Image (cartoon, rainbow over all chains, first blue to last red; front, side):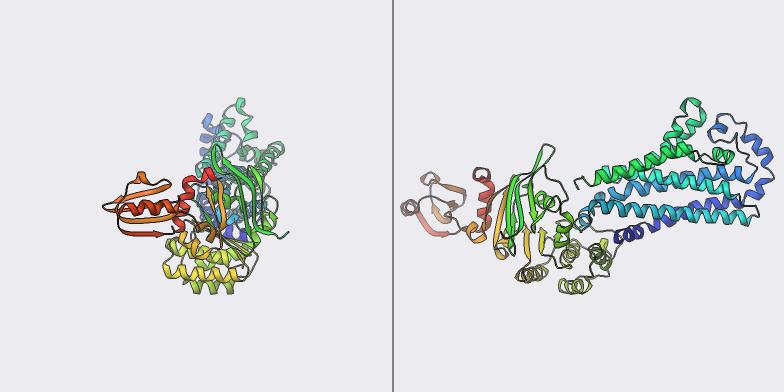
Length: 261
Length: 295
């Protein structure tokens, strides 16, 4: 528990900034929705007829003039990208930062097994991801209530659940990578998150690249899919959770055998 | 059989093709104040890091306080205090928080002992660790290594950055701990420290222990440091090392027949003469120079 508390203390500023930034963008977007709603009919027809751009962001399925359509796209872009970057940074730095900052020797000469270190750091990541998602979810619901719209609990709940799973997957994969590297790896983490985001856009553009939706976690967070189907894509999530498990397993396997520099 | 504080048998670690330690044998008795001497790159840190489980040996076996270094890492670390040569701490933390974290990771309340050590070492616990000088960071490392009352202290270049008064206090603390039965394993380049404080020492060279004995025995040598003013030809004396000549002063280490030395000196033009035992440093340098032949 000491290490979990220590990790949370080290990460609270970053958590506060990311949670604050993502929440603020989401809340602002929701607060301007009533103003934009009146103009949405014409905007929606424009957005739905922009060819590849429309397909890339799933706007041919979603109606931008409805709260769920607006939220699905806006949420996907803000919570999707913001959450993915936050999760990637958390995961990639958790283990490798100790070696980069020279504190690994200090930590690993205390009576903790390597597996305990991996477990406690993983728990700290999970707690931070949960905190970010709970706060963002509550503020989003609050902002929907504030603008006087009925809260579409099911759609919003499913969207947020999907993004929570996406963050877990990216954090876990980055965590596995973190156990294998000796330097900070921030570029790797951010690069991976962005690459996965663009994989999904490519998959939206062409059917030939649809398999990318099974590789990228953004494949199961697609607002258009979730809102129109009213459910999550079970197979894609199962593949994603397999990547999550693989990332965590890699972290345990590698870190328990690693020579600390 | 009495348990040893440290026992290593044929411990080997290569980093790719680069040698870390190569079939290193080492025994440190419980309760010893043991010195570990070697030049840079000799394998001192690799030895320590392997014993503490930071790196995994390629082959060989090791025990610390009777516990297997491969299987009982956690139990070993519970009973060992380690001071690395470079002390890195988590930035943003105050000294008191760092000490509390270290104690917390050991699931111990070490506050009373930590306060006593901080007072003796004159360490300000309110300062942030990144604002500390090298010497003060070293003090934080010392308190972290000592506050949980370990049975074995492994200290890697512990006095770097400490002023002479604090060094004196630090060694007083170590001597007290040693008298209480704590084993002290001191890895150092400062041979005078080893000579002054350690009962036994090992010399490591190119990854292998080339000499291990009491400091008294290590310092004993049939070689003598000869310093004379006058003129003397080097060719007249065999078994001479470290020949230096400046103006009319000649100095060298002689390990040959004493009668022959006296005869040569008697025949030479000598205005002043000193023949003394070499200090430990000279002897260790001698080991460094010919270690591989002795191994």
